[in-house]
Length: 444
Image (cartoon, rainbow, N blue to C red):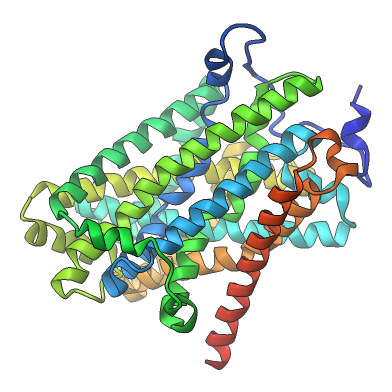
């Protein structure tokens, strides 16, 4: 029997649970210390944090750091703040309405609108996948010398890794992703120590500058960083995977679940900011300060790290972290794709079929660009994919904010007014920056 409160304010009743095969499979302690109960909620936030470190983010951050020094650190900080707000709303929507974002759009809007939003979400996932394909292929080339075109084809095999983890249980996927995040953090920690940046300039870089809005080149990279950080598919992902927890049906249980889920995502995103900012700091310290102001290719950055930092291990750490990022992004994009397809159009396919179709669509442009334009073309495609993500973001953000601001849809777990105000400010800022980008692109 469905809870009536979960269907109030929606045009259609809630259907099958999000990610039904793993829905409510992770038990939550009803007694014991708060730390023990909170432990059950650790994981989803770190899967969302993968969006900070996907290969597309590397391209934009490397280009931004090498071209503008530490100036775009303020964009990374703003993106982090926006991500914390939006991901907290995802958890609120899931726990308060019993729906993921895709299901909420389906149940709230007419079918043509819902299908339009589904298409936008699929475009965002394909753009994400293109970045993963290229990034992983470049990592394989840098570490093992595998040709780019062959590396692009090898990336299709990651579907078997995801299948194996799904059969073991959802906690295994989370543990795998958190382990790779730790490897990435260690790799960048060592590289930053070797780069020895100007920490005073780093601190000043976190302060915003008006040049970001007035310089079209800087704005383009800023939107790329934004698109690589606050990723559309992450909003669908978080609202689905948080429901893998069996947190209960009473209002006190849901309030506690929302508190723990928000803490999990906030801590994970703050930790991810350190890694996200490290990419830009490394580029600024190693390239910008040494006169290399046009670095946008991952291979070029890899080749310059050893002579500039004076350590042979630096390029290896760079390549290892890049491969880990690509594998991590694969897992989260697969789950997001499943949530989007099942939620919007109630179409279920086996995860491996869904993954192969999505990866095949991503491989075609990546392979063509690799064959005809080489590394320079892949760098441009990486940055473009992140800008595409940024342009798609509003189509996920505005519905999320409006749903969680509606008492008829959310009941007692409606977002407080201060949070709704910040969320709407975030949504309009994203939309305004995108309008400015389109204007500069076509008329500037």
